[in-house]
Length: 293
Ligand SMILES: Cc1cc2nc3c(=O)[nH]c(=O)nc-3n(C[C@H](O)[C@H](O)[C@H](O)COP(=O)(O)O)c2cc1C
Image (cartoon, rainbow, N blue to C red; front, side):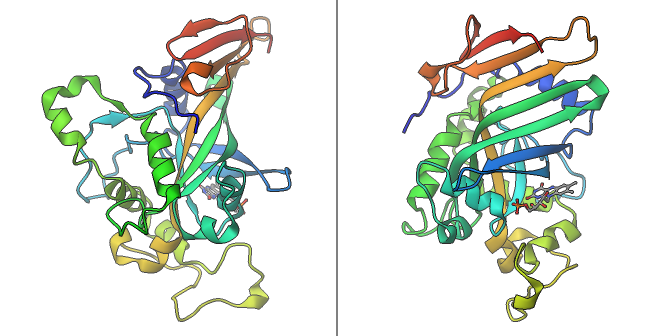
């Protein structure tokens, strides 16, 4: 496993990316997610940004207990369904080469993705490349040792390396770190969705022909609402939070055609990244190069 040490400072692109996001819908901005099929073919689809991992946005309707605000990361997240192709793609193309059954049963993944954001308000296109990890509520923590499968261990190890301790926390934050719960974070991701959106995780299997019917006994149907994740076994079986651990990020600002440049930041090899195009300037764990657009 090529693990890089925990990143000590925010990625150099994070602040600008966040500013552009805030001007263009914030947490709920749409982006295009590309995955690779096991045959090496591209697949792209629209998804909704749900914040950076460990700093889930506030939602006035969500009254659940929250994790202590002790971590932050540079990892974009979205929610998805275990039965969708994208979940299988990131399992099958990850190092563990997960099969279809594994991709539907729990935490894992690690395949390559690219997330593309077009921010009209700032005339900027952002492309975030990295690995995609898929987290399920039931095996991520607190389960039996058997449920803590190798997928769970890998995902926790890989994602934790992107989780920085917030600097303003002091010694109290150190104590709170041990109470931070992956499962509680999952429950809050679900709770942040509307009741209808939560209910979609009880839909009949996405992509399966209507002729094959649906599992009425399990409660599969379209147009349902759902409550808390802990009270919804069917939705919990299908609900996933996907975390992108970025390795290369580029931004092209098209505001002024006479001055437009493209910036490419690449996580350096020492920190588990692919290195990157030179000549480049080193900013923390990231190398930056400015190119013609
Ligand atoms: C505006 C919009 C937002 C969407 N957001 C998501 C999302 O956040 N997560 C998701 O899995 N699918 C989302 N979808 C659905 C996907 O685009 C896609 O149709 C579905 O996930 C199946 O894709 P797949 O079989 O390639 O995995 C969204 C679709 C639209 C039109």
